[in-house]
Image (tube, rainbow, N blue to C red):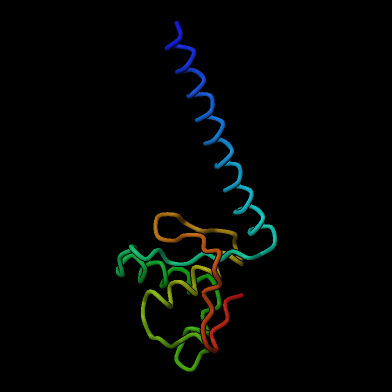
Amino acid sequence: MNIHKTYYKIMAKLTFSLCSLGFFFCFIMCSSYVHGKTWCVAQTQAPEPKLQEVLDYLCGRINCADIQPGGSCFDPDTVRNHASYAIDMNFRTNDECDGSYAAIAVTDPSYGACVYP
């Protein structure tokens, strides 16, 4: 009988700890989102052909002038960088961040003259 009580006490503490950790993580993420301090960018493991497909699709729906030659975010001229910018612009415009190729970032991906909104 003592073994069961000990087991239940340990499980209760573990459950409480995991729930607390989950709540804390959600609070941090939600707080960042509410204050507009999140971006949606290409996942590092997303394959380039998929990112090119997404880039082509999104640039048919949103303004991609900043990632065209001469644009503030054209360099470096890579599919991943251009896709990240387009994915974030789509996130800003349509509130979409597709987890199959994109991820929420809490660190500003802006660099040099390229400023993500």
